[in-house]
Length: 199
Image (cartoon, rainbow, N blue to C red; front, top):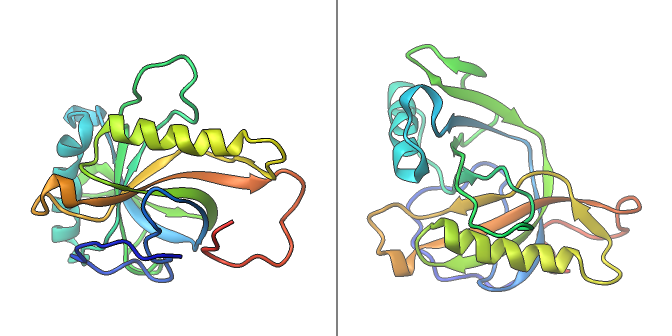
C-alpha cells in the first residue's frame, strides 16, 4: 500500500494503521480506542468542524492529554441517496492509549464525552485537500459505489467518518484525510486476510 505525502504533526493512536493511499480504495482494520467527542449543536456548540474543535482542544489541555492525529469528524448519513451534501455532526480527539483517563462526561465541560469505541473494519479512501462536507460527500460516493458493486462481500456496518490528519496550520491544498465507512462481511469473515490490506 503506497504511503501518501503528509505533514506528520502528531503521533497516531496506539495500534492504528498508517494512512492509506490517495484516491485508492482499501480495507483497513482498527483496534479499539478511547476518544473525546463533542456533537455540533449541543449546549451552544456551533455546527461545523471549527465550532466543535474548541471544546475538544480545551478538554485535552485540562487533562494533559497529548494531541494525536487523526481527528475524527463524524457524519450521521450512511449513503447519499436523496441528494444533498451531508453536514458533520460530531468531532472527536483520539487518545493515544485506550487505557488513559476515564470514560464519561468531562466534569468541567459536559458537552465533551469520553467514549470507548470497539475495534472495527472499514473501507477507506485517502483524499487531498481541506476537510469540507463536499469533499467528504464525493469520497463517500466512491465508497458506496464500491460496496454496491456486483459480487461485493462487504456491507455497511455503521455511519461514516472523515479522518483529518492535519491542523489549520497546513495549507488546505496539502492537507491529507481519509473518508471511511465501517463494514462487515456479508457471509462471515473472509479467510486469510490481514490488517490494512488492499482488497
